[in-house]
View 1 (cartoon, rainbow, N blue to C red):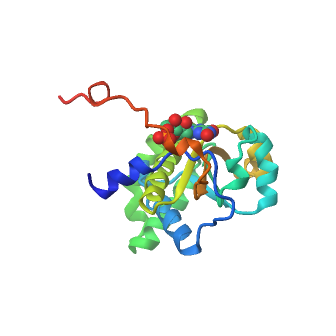
View 2: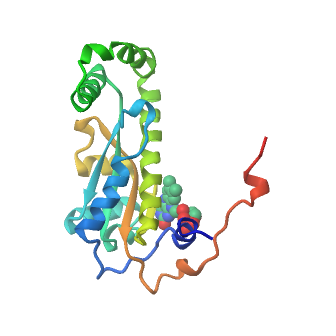
Length: 210
Ligand SMILES: Cc1cc2nc3c(=O)[nH]c(=O)nc-3n(C[C@H](O)[C@H](O)[C@H](O)COP(=O)(O)O)c2cc1C
């Protein structure tokens, strides 16, 4: 088996983190890079990512995440917060960024702007929110794979009250909503979950070669 697959076998949704081990800055940087480099529809990255290290903040968040121990025991908590609606300003900011980075006049992007206006901006606010959330999950997936690659443990989590998270983290006023979270760090030797066999659909159930 190659190392990539071995590392995916090694990873599991960590239930108990070793509280004494923290992710070093250079490793955290790589994990965040994996989020930053994630693909997204039209490249819009309709989300922002909070990297929560502060123990007091995590103490506040834990009760509204079913008291899951990972929230406070992991090295860091990552919150993927997606846009609750997409405005023309978001589109313009994105086009400005392309224009700057690729050194092209923003007017040259008018065709792309029309495409975004006729697709993303035409959607209802609730469809835009759902679309933005899907993009955030792609970034979560990248983070999980990258963490496994560097032998850093992670737990993806939906078990939290998004409304309460938004209140505590001040996300609503920024037009954002907590979509999914991940705790990252190093597994505790005592975490029995690491020994459980992986349960997955077999190839026949999962794949259909056509
Ligand atoms: C989007 C998402 C949400 C999840 N939410 C939680 C959670 O709130 N708490 C938890 O302990 N595990 C959570 N999990 C972990 C899953 O239960 C776990 O990934 C699944 O059982 C497969 O096991 P494995 O990841 O250990 O291979 C979540 C996983 C995903 C992908």
